[in-house]
Image (cartoon, rainbow, N blue to C red; front, side):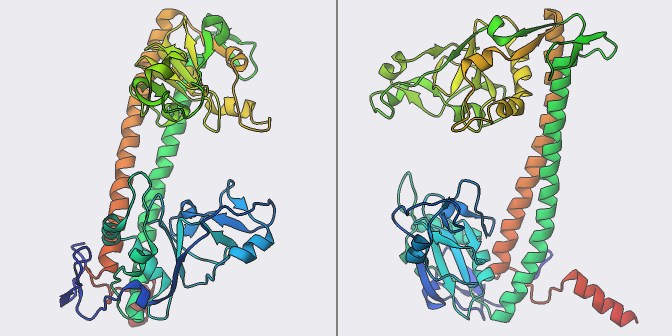
Length: 453
């Protein structure tokens, strides 16, 4: 922030979490500069598909916008009329239950709100965009931390929102700050998008490298033959093609019953592998779990031994492999490959490039996607000679390590840019920097052209 000037004079805001503000700014409580602060429906509405009226909550507030995804529920016209609240172009939405502090501007969406979404209708003294930016600041997050209640599910009360102090310049100055932030954050967002695209390209490249290694080998001059499997195409002539059902015992995990029984779950005896544990990252190995079963719960279901290759087999994230580094139970959304007759890491890499293909195979059916054990057993796999498998695994590890370093660098760059974005918003909206003399580069160029004419 060194390149930006500070204001000439400051005053104490009266609250520690906000600190000093410019001496000519006001610091009213939100209820003094808003016409209405409320929240949404505290019960579940009646649902009906195809109406165009949506029921949303705090999780629908994403990056300043209301995001209505494919899982959003629709409500009938009478429910919309019954439960809608007055929202307009001066309304800011704020998540107040669960994840606190997500914000969005209301832009005419046909929605009714759930209890985790609060609405704040601004009056003429405060611009909605300025308030939205303030609610995104580091200072506002400090206030949320001071005011939230609850231990597992956090809650921010409407009373806390009403009594929140707002650093408030004139409308003219708010407009200038908004313009400054629109321009500066757009530049940062462009840089972030480039890094995100780079990460996606690196992931695609990594997948292509693995796919080529496990289906074509490392020798570009080797003689090829038809694999007999349409999607696999040609493979090296000296390789064989088998199926997972022939080279392993494919077995499904299982959950203790009844589900949720405290004598079975949330214990401290046996690690409990769920689909979420397998799909949470791109690592080869699973070394720990978030939850455990009790001894009684563990005794009801299969224990997979350390070194077992696992595969998620149900839900939207099916088809993801992981190698187990602990003895653990797994739920029925997971299959294990016991007595595997080939290198486990090779089998892991092979399955890792089939994820999207496996999801496509089960997409046609209705209900929850599921890879049953018969489907998994029938998955074809290439079998190079043992010494070649070791070479392939070593080559893949070397190359993906390179990609991982590049992706980590890009992720670090994104983190730094996101931190700068938040810091810039916080500094501008709370008056730590003075942007009153800032000019949009396009307008500045127009002035320069006029002066040179």
